[in-house]
Image 1 (cartoon, rainbow, N blue to C red):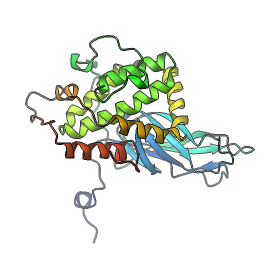
Image 2 (image 1 turned 45 degrees about the vertical axis):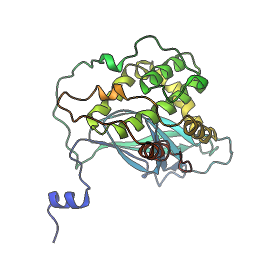
Image 3 (image 1 turned 90 degrees about the vertical axis):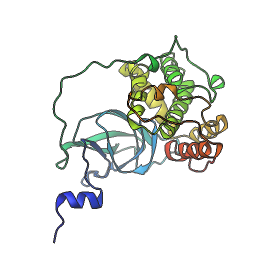
Image 4 (image 1 turned 135 degrees about the vertical axis):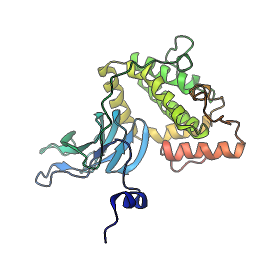
Length: 293
């Protein structure tokens, strides 16, 4: 006897109540010997565990994909960037298309974009202009901050605007360091501020900083980031973030995004809890699995 759909959804936790999209790297073209599956390495700076498929929120994402095909040279690029504007209830089947004469030369190929039958799109609503609140804006102009200028008191608000300035000046090393730390600290803040709607302030800050860059500026940075993730430098950055340590500031930018009737948040953490959350940031978010704070 089959379970009713609603009951089976509750038991198996397999149904989604809100619209979503999907990246699927598991359906390479069998008839093409140069077409391979891809693994998902990172999405918007959040590192994944090399899965072939991943459900994502609709909207713009920067996805780092790694080919499962053979690479003969150690210098060959195994990871490329896939900028994706994901629509609700769409499955994006992506693969690695290698060159027939040179296996090291490959590109991301989209085989299919199709509707997800079990997903229901949201009702169409008129667009509302995005307003950036004052607490999600810097108090003045922020220039590109070098690695030596970043501390555990540098907030994601400052870091993301610094990253934008670094990308504009093509200082990609400083941009990558700031991007890593901004992602880590924003993730840490989302763990200590438990009211989930307040986490949306991070996207507002991105819209006011790195998302204001031109498509070419973003693409150049994303490619530099892809090359960085495929190198040994990532582990060095993990060590650097660990050395800087957990944030030493009050997450006012996130606390101020609480609704007026929201539950008060206690962010005054004990040293033990702070260490636990920072270890989770290093391991679960940055993918620095061998590190402990």
